[in-house]
Length: 163
Image 1: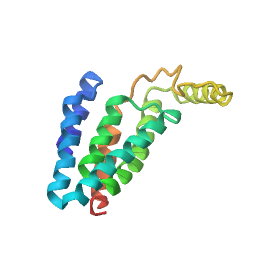
Image 2: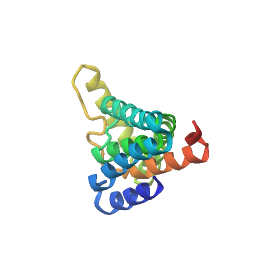
Image 3: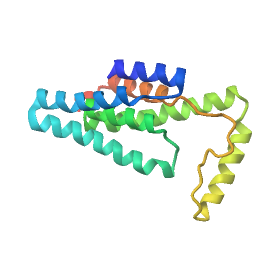
């Protein structure tokens, strides 16, 4: 998992992409490793980890814009580590993602503009009009793989892999 995350961060920083050739084989390997380690219950835990992440990722666009590569990276994490770890990794990724966004806003001196855009977009969204909450932002794309990697490392450090 750590090797996959490291490669994802590098490709995200260099090309703003997290490639399928990285995430898909890792997700498949996670399911296979779960089956090898613990038989059907192990495979089921890994599959459930991937499915729960997929479910969250399908709901997230209403709250935050998550790129397809980022979503597939999180799904691969769920498949590699199982349900309990995936939940902790997603929660911690959100914490690190918020911190990363705050750092970028402060460094680019865009806190006021971002707050204004967020409020304006939320108000237009409240009328039932689907809106990308980041629309109008001058920040550009934030390499969210960094937040995902930090969230996963933090989950490892907290022992979330033990379940």
